[in-house]
View 1 (cartoon, helix red, strand yellow):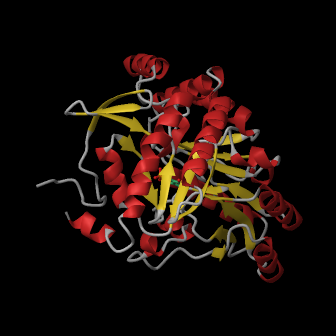
View 2 (cartoon, protein in one colour):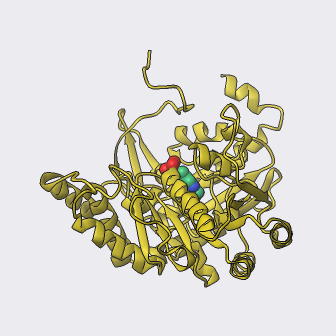
Length: 401
Ligand SMILES: *Cc1c(COP(=O)(O)O)cnc(C)c1O
């Protein structure tokens, strides 16, 4: 009997090693990895530069403490400031922690301006994490159920609907921030229109709200630019990061600038592990490698080719509702729940996942080549067609076998 707490419905596969976008299980079966540990393995598996840097770092020092100077933390923060265009970085260890820090920044910003009960606008279908504050900001009832009472102070609106935000602005004087995943990941690869994001920024400016862009999943080069807000051409005030930031070493970061700069002062927030030398070595090496290997351009071009390939093969196929995404963040929405496709994929040597019940999600490493991207499409398309041809009534029987 496993003593690991039963919080995940796991697939019956264990990967024991990897190379680039390829994985092997204990029986030496080879898989094409189109998930990258849910957007974590930015440089793929076993990237020589990351392995060398981390190995050397471990032999020098893994952890010291934020009670002391950490030069690698300074270096990592300099690089993040450079690519985000923002000013201050708080380091933590995960996405929910980065978002928790963002929520605290917004509340402190409100209190500093005399708003006693600050509120934050959040989106339908949003996912921000599973701590009490971040699950309250999340839109999924599945994530929240059983953990009430929820944290107060969130106002929910539909994505891509500026009028809904204007209505809240007119009636709720407690609002201090808008918190948005510019491309929703767990919610089903839902892409914000760039005009909508620009409009949101304008509403934030008019009301002196913070614009907080949760780029934990969509950020860090995946869409072909470092961050999604850069496609829309404006600056946010707060950007939580995690997942791919250190190429697989656990790390999170809450990056602030604009109106949020200087809100946190000594004593306002902290983390024992946050920003330790091992994680910071992962950040510096991952960001430098993305830049020097030209992986932003690669994500844009391979991602566009994959989206085209999927559209050409699956667009208009009965049962396929939509193929969408940006760069290497791609969703294929079906008209029915399709969780069983994940197991069919593993059997066929392809790793991906399904989110929001009926959206196939592809998040490959930024090192994926054009040929490997084509291979993902060539392996996925027949699986989807086979799954759909089983008919709407049959998937249940397949799952039971
Ligand atoms: C994964 C994710 C989180 C939570 O990150 P954890 O590291 O699992 O806590 C928050 N926001 C978004 C957009 C995510 O994709």
